[in-house]
Amino acid sequence: MLKFKVWIIQKFYRIALFWWKWWSMSYRWLYHRNYSKTLLTGDLTPQEVQENLDLVKWTKDGTRELWDSCGSPHWVQHVINEIKANGNQPEGALDCDDFTSWACAVVDKSYEPRIFSFTWVGRTLDAKGASKHKIQGHAMCLLKQKDLDQIFHVGNWGTSASGNNLRELCIDVMTRASASQAIGWALLDTKLNVIDYG
Image (cartoon, rainbow, N blue to C red; front, side, top):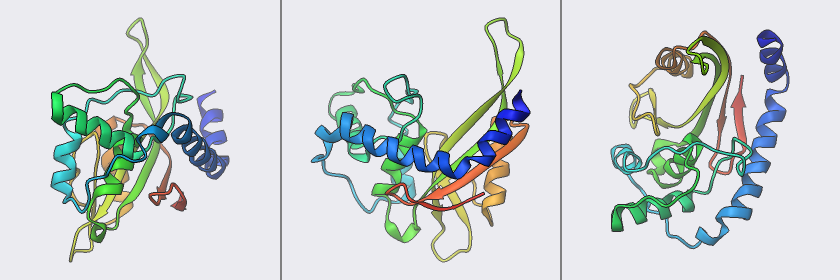
């Protein structure tokens, strides 16, 4: 069954990315348009981006998000503003792709920000504590080191070490997640348009 699921995801990976973009844009309009006038902090260094993200508590997507959507960076900015103002985080989904959308929107553009999405087969524990395979994924803000031919990422997992290519970063994610098999990766721009995938 797992092999079939992996095959289906890989076969329709590009279509899934297209669906994710349009669902995310619809979700932003439905639930985050009230935050569209929240001013985004701009031209931050990767360190400043990470320091802000470290203030935010990860909250998984639920049924309202259809278990996976990329929220508006203005929503995340609102959350950060509220945390800094009164120490309280507003209720609402704040999954890895929400962290990423904000990071890509506010980091200094000379770092060439991209949304980096990666999917793999990992292991989780069921209710009885038994290990089982599960398809998992993560989104990060991919950045290029200034004056160096290296890349790294920031997000709710923190700042990664630099790598020479995307393959090295994929292997790093798999190691951190104890993944058993890679499924696919994608690079997207800040408007969720696919730049490349594999």
